[in-house]
Image (cartoon, rainbow, N blue to C red):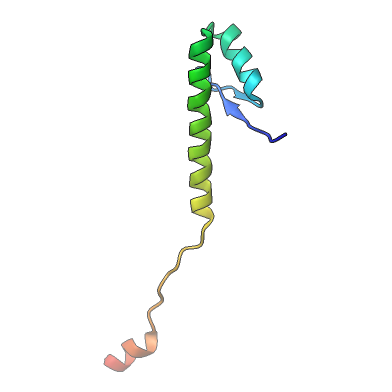
Length: 75
């Protein structure tokens, strides 16, 4: 099973599994079942968005280097 690592949107606590987040929000913050499910969906979307940012940062950027020889010849 994949580590999921959710963050509670109310208190910011890190929670490892979806069912643990469900129980945490239901009993600790007294959310109704529908509210908990909506909050979990938001947490999943936020996690996917953050993972997308990380993958973009890891991609190498192409930097065009100017050739110093041409600049020197022009002077």
